[in-house]
Length: 144
Image: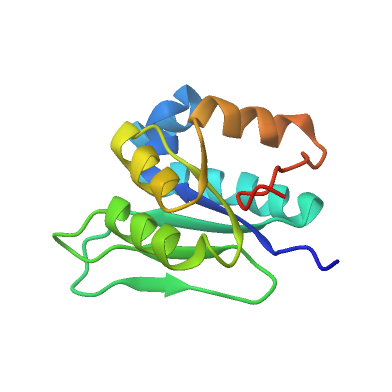
């Protein structure tokens, strides 16, 4: 039986503001906090095999993305759009085809993603995932 691909979708700024070390970096220079989060999530992807998608609130006229087949995917929402909108759209579109977990502190975003079939985790649980240093067994969102 073929296992479904696993994805972790991260609400970038939600995590930055929830983790005190990243919040302090953000106060000094926002790009430092984003880069530190990206590095931690890149390391997590490398050892876990779980594909990571990070979505940040952006300021540009269009949604922008950085994607390399071997790296984490990073999206910035367009001006006037929140990262939540992109995350909810991804959950709606892909939860039936892939095992998805959404990491955010936003309760409404968690409810929407869950209603789409994705699992959700808090920023604290995400930190535990990263600090464990080993893959975690995911339960399938399809109830296998």
